[in-house]
Structure formats: C-alpha cells, structure tokens
Length: 173
Image (tube, rainbow, N blue to C red):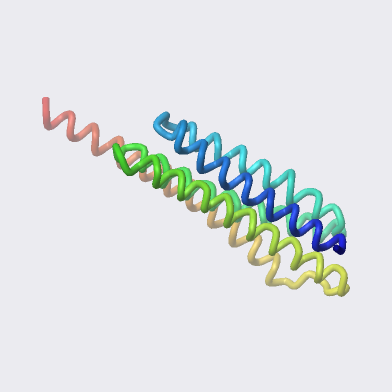
C-alpha cells in the first residue's frame, strides 16, 4: 500500500466518522436550539485543523494563503446556510430532528470532501509548477463579497422579522 493510498483511506475514515458524529449529535441534542450550530462549528474546526492546515503546509506561501482563505470562506458560507436551515428545522416537532441530523451530517461530509478535493488540486498545481491564475484571486474576492452580502442580508431579514413581530403585537393590542 502506498503512502497516498494510506492517507486517502485514513481521510475517508475520518470523514465518515465526523459525519456520523454530527448526525448523532443532532439526533441526541438537536432539540436544544443552537447546540447543532456548536456541533457544526466543531466539525468545521476539525476540517480546518485536520485537513486544510496540514495539507496546505506543503504549498508555497502565496498558494497557501489563497487556498486556505478560499476554503475557509466556502466553508463559512456552507456553515452559515446549514445553521440557518437546521435552526429553522428546530421548530418542526417530529421530523425536525432527523432532518437536522441528515442535513448536518451531509453538510460536514460534503464540506470535508470539497476541501480535500480543492486542496489536492492545488497540491497537484504546485507540483506541476503552475502559477496561480488571476481568476483564482477573483474567486476568492467573490467568495468574500458573497459572505459579506449574506451577513448583511441576514441582518436585514432579522430586522424585517422583528418589525413584523412588532407590528403584529401592535395590531393585537
């Protein structure tokens, strides 16, 4: 067995293990609001520390910065969408917990897979001495802009929701 096959097999076992752990945590603790979000944050930290950092340490400094920040921003966006979706599912009595478990485990598995594929793609580019293309920096900037825009839109949605509740309470009074 080669080193690459061994590393790939170990990574697959870790990916399956963390996805199952996230699913079980959602099933057991998902009825408590925001516990699922904490579980997803821990899984994202594992992806960063277990996959992203050790693998990108083999890259040149410029490519390492590009790769780490692109992966972090994509993971942050996926995490934000998943947290919003799973917290909304907390409101559904019977089907909410299993749905949260499936969505949380799926998000972690997909995020870990995507980060692994992206980082290995960058490693192959580094080994082939291919320079960083300008479109890669554009993607990084667009990911950052998308994340900032989603935070602003989320704040506006919460403000609109608070305003709607305020109007409903005023109407009921």
